[in-house]
Each structure stands twice: as structure tokens, then as C-alpha cells.
Length: 531
Image (cartoon, rainbow, N blue to C red; front, side, top):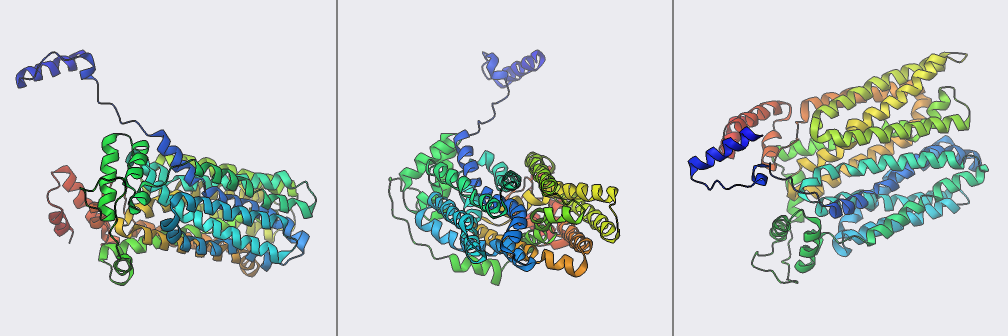
């Protein structure tokens, strides 16, 4: 350290700079502080995902008791479990318009309120009809939350923490699933007609906590600027940025996006009307550039394979899988299911810290490869159990282990990367619409998988169902390997160069690396090298 300081003094002497430096002058520059208030706001917004996770987790155990109490068929159980994903499309579709009208914060409040009403209806439902209506109401609330939470998170987060916080919704989905599993076990001792009602009705509690917490948060600065409330937006940005300079930079950026002239700095200004929504859809679907078309295929593909590889069947029907494996006791089935929730939650936390260190693409390929492996052996163990007349202890053990492996591999890559990757690759102007299409594909695929699992395994055996999911996973792995470039650390300009070449994206990646080793030169020059 002394030698380095002496060398720096000599250099200053040569350059003519004053030599009376303090000890602190030789210390490395301080890293910018993270804004804890902004992170707390973004984290609370992401907690809306708990509502979806709780519903998925609690329904996995509740449907056992609902079937016994209401004497419904397996097809009705499938519809009950899976339709919430389809209902959520209504909430997702309405969230954009609603959030532009009443604001991001009150839209999150609306999401929690609607889910609260749905949970209460499900908890007091005397029969299947009203129970399905409660699912419909709760689904709309979940849809609102799925759409608005990421938007608020992106708009409130400081630049330094934005990537890290983008993966938080998946963390809270897993936490919600775990809470749902615990609720199943906690109320399993109650009489059948009461147990499942408590399980479903308890979902009202996290929604109340969420609504109260959100009311203490500030409104999104981007929405405030859209309404011409520059004074309020500046105050929020000062509280949620790491410095005054960053706050001003963010404000200028938002003003430019909203079409507000830079010289207007009054607390309230008039915002020019923009009618470019139609042109955005044209750029995204009707007349996309090769890069945008590739981005859209990649986004829709990753959302499709996330759900088509069968994760909802494993999570939603895990008690039924353990029953097929030979575990007959309610207690043992639910305890094994709680273990699934614990493993899933632990590995999503691991993934959160690996995303910016290892990269998106390696985690994605490792995750899908591990899922294919676990699904294949899960199918094999269930087939052995199905064809055996007595208990096969090693096959039962392998079945439980492979279920845990499957959720672990999903959580360490495919679960969080799907949402992070999609939010990164779309150009800013197309991001909201592109992400909404991804959410739609995700929810529709999830609904189909959830609503067909029981019918599927009755048609081709339960082992055959997981062999089928493993086959879909193989196709997904090939799609990811050939079509999805690494996005870690890439700028929007880099995205335009990386995408549009489909399976030849590696050539573009090589050109970008060469450019970074030199001065990178002109952006058009790099594009011409790729073309």
C-alpha cells in the first residue's frame, strides 16, 4: 500500500499536480450506497406474487379434502385447480389501463382487495358453484398483481438494484407456495368440511397485509410525470435514488419519454397527448424488424417451455404424486409436500445471487437439463411402482428425491430467468406490450397443464405423463441453446445486434467481444460486420 501511494505521489509530481494529498485520497473510490427505501418499496410491491404462490400451494392439498367433502369428479378438480390461471388473464389485461388511470400504487391495492374478496368467497362457499366463482374473483386479483408488480418495481427501483429486484416476484411466488403447503398441514386435522375452507380463506390475510403496506409507499415517479406532476415525481425520485444527480437524470429521462420539454420544471405541467400505442403493436407483431421478431420468439418460447415442462403438475399435484408412489397417510403426503416447498424456496434464493455472477444462459441450460433428468427418473420410478404388486422402497425413495430435484432445478434457473430475461430483451418502447404477451402465454400454458394432468395420467399412466414432460423439456433445452443469447451486462444497442440472427447469434456475440477489446468503434460498423 505504501509503495502504491509513493508511486502515485511521483506521478503527480511529474504531471504537475499538487503533492499535498491526504491519506484518504489514496483509498479506492467508495461504491454508491444502495437506497434502502426504494428497495423496501420494490420488495413490498413484489410481494403481490405471494398471492399467486399461496393459491397454487394451498390448492395442492385443499383439493384432496374438497373432493372428499363435495363429492366432485377428477375433471372438476382439474378445472377448479387450473382455471385461476385463465381467469388471471382478465386481470392482467385490465391492469395496464387501470394503472394508467388510478396509478400503480392503487392498482396494487385493488389487486389485494379483489383477491381478499375471492379468498373470503372460497372460504365460505357451501358448494362447487360458489367455490368456482371465488376462484374467478381471486384469479382477477392475481392477474392484476402479476402485471402491475413488475411495472412498479422497474419504475421505483434505483438503477443499481433494478436487475436484482426483477427476480424478486419469483422469490415471493415460492414463499407463497411454501405458506400454502404449511397451511395444508396445519388445517389437515380439522373436520373435512372445515379444513379446506380455512386453508382457502386464510389467503385473505396476506392480501390485507399487502394492502396496508402498499398504502405507505409512494406513487411511481413515471406515472406522476405522465400526469404532469413533476414536483411530486421529483420528491419521490429524491427519496428512491442513490444521489441527487441520479434523481435528476431519471427525471430527465422520464420527461423525455413522456414528451415533456426539458425547460418545463414547474410542479404541475401539461403533458402532450401521445397516440403511439397502435404503432407499437405494428412494430411488435405486424411489421417487426428481424431483431424484434427474434426477441418476441425468444420471449414467448421461454414462457411456454417454463410451464409446458410440467412444473405446475409437480407443484399443484404433489400430494397425488406421493399417493401414487405409495404414501397413503394424509400427514405423510402433506409433510412431503412441505419439503417440496422448502426446497423450492431455498433454491430460488440461491438463484437470486447467481443471476448476475454466472449469467442467464448457463443457469437456464443447467436448470432445464436437470429438470429433464429428474422428470425422466420420476417417470421411471412411478412406472416401476405402478407395475409392481407390492411396495418397492427404493422406487418410492427415488420418486420423492426426483420431485425435490425437479423443483430445485426449476427454481435455480428456469423460474427466475424467464422473468428477468424477458424484461431485459425488449426495447424500451415495446417492453410493456411484449411482456404482456409473455405473461399471456405463460398463464394459458399453465392453465392447460394444470387442467389436464389428471386426465393425461389416466390416459397414458402417471409415469408416461412425466416422460412426456421430459420430452418437452428436451425440445426446450434445444430451443434455449440455439435461440437464446446471453444478455448479462448487455446494453440495448447490444440486444439489437445479438438478436435477429437466430441460431447464428454466436457470431454477433464474437463481434461484440472484439469490439469491447478495442474501442468498439461505431455501432453501424459492428452491425455491418455481423451482417
